[in-house]
Image (cartoon, rainbow, N blue to C red; front, side):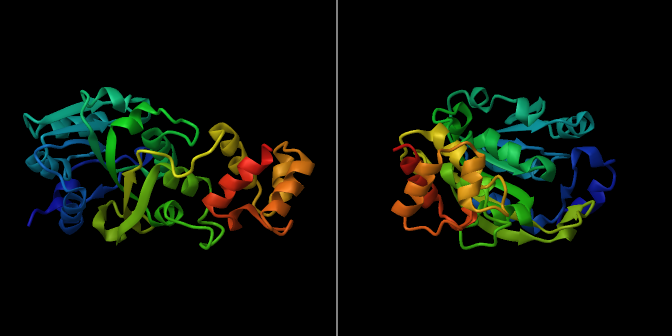
Length: 279
C-alpha cells in the first residue's frame, strides 16, 4: 500500500492556496472507479498538488492534462515523467478548457480548494444563460472533491433545508445530473481540514434542465428570489425590480401563497414563474 501521508509530509503545504492533499488510497481508488477512465479518455485534473491522484490517472488514461497554480507542486509533478501527462502552470479560472482538449471530450477530476468551489463549477458548466458555453461543450463528466456542506447544496431540492437549496443548486443541476458518490472523512487529507468532504459526480447535460423563452430573465428571477432569504418571494421579486401586478398574477396563476419564500419552489416552478412574469 502506498504511504501517501508520509510523502505528503515532505511537501510544505500552503494555506493561502487551500491545499489539503488526499492521502487515503481507498478514496483515490474510488475516484478512478467512478470516473471509469479508459485508454480512450482525456482527463483534466484540476489542482493535482503533488500528484497522488495524477500518478494513478496516467496509468489508465490516454492523456492527463493537469492544471496547477503552485510552482513548487509543478516541480514535484515534473518528477512523474510520463509521456501522457501535460502540465499547465496556471489558475484554472483563467484557463480556457475548450482549447485544451484538441477537439476531444474531457473527463474532469478535481480535488479543489474549497474557497473557490462555486466559481470553478460556474467555470466548468457556464452560467444558466450561457447556452453555448465552450468549456461545457467539451466536458463529459466531472468528479469533484468538495466540502460536504457544498455537496449537500449541489444535490439539494426545495425539500432540503433552506440553507442548502439555492443558487449553486440551480446552477449545478441546470447543466448536470448531480449526485454524491461518498462522504470522505477529514483524516483522508493532509493537512486534515476542519470539516468532512464529499466526492460528487456531475454528468453534463446536452440540453439545459428547462426549456425557457429567456434564460437571462430566468437568471434574474432566481437571483432575486434568493437574494434575501428572510423575505417572502413576493418582496424579493419587488426588490429585484419586477412589476407588482405581474408578481401577483404569477403567484395566483401558480396557486402559491403570497407569503411563500423562494427556496420553497422547485427549479421547475421557478422556471414557470419566470415565464409568467414575462406575460
